Amino acid sequence: MPPNQRKPDRPRVQFVCSEQLASTLQEWADRDNRSRSNLIETLLEEVVSDRNNPHSLPTNELIDQITKFIALLLGERERDGVSYVLLGQTLSIDPEKLHDLYQLVQQCRSERQNKEKTR
Image (cartoon, rainbow, N blue to C red; front, top):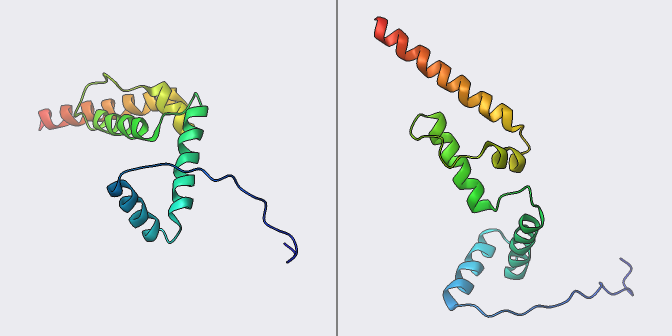
């Protein structure tokens, strides 16, 4: 940008939060070597993007679904609450492939159990 041109003005937004939240945000920004304002803008962009994408789960729900799916694959839980469709849409994976993966793991587990029984 030439020296005589100004950077375009960006609107300023002010919000009020607790001292603890402000401190936590500052520590996070410091660890990432950026300003608190930049961190907050990035976080808000992610939230708005999640909200505007009807095929995407919010991050906390995505983590919950992935955790449940992994526990399902490990045989630590039943399928209740695991949505192949939501996981697939959010991760850009065909939900049928997630279901196929689950069935493959189940088949392997069953074969392993049968081998152990015959020993």
